[in-house]
Length: 126
Image 1 (cartoon, helix red, strand yellow):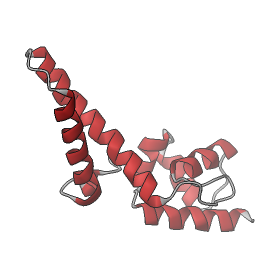
Image 2 (cartoon, one colour; image 1 turned 60 degrees about the horizontal axis):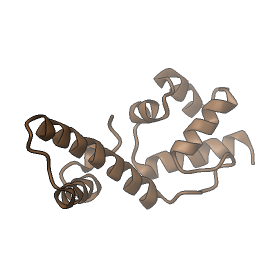
Image 3 (cartoon, helix red, strand yellow; image 1 turned 90 degrees about the vertical axis):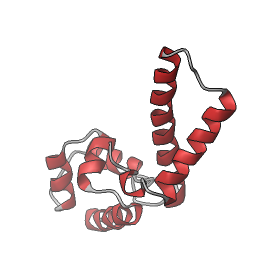
């Protein structure tokens, strides 16, 4: 596979996943300018290509190793856990910690909102 073919696969995958270059920059811990150069076809370090493909669920050759649905599901769960942990921490400070079953329900509901609900547009935002 040529570098151009890999770039086309990565571009297509980024669109399929629905992540902006700005959000990809934050999730991958790569600079926005570095990613812009990469997507423009400029030479970048192999470690940059590796990070981008990994975040997008591709191997180094651009082949899918994680499905788009699984990527979204994992991201939604991670964000839901983070948000609910903030609520739980605040509640615990007020001596009103939530029960385990309630926490699980809140996480599931919040995850659903990131996948198909009101927060869908914020799935990849940091």
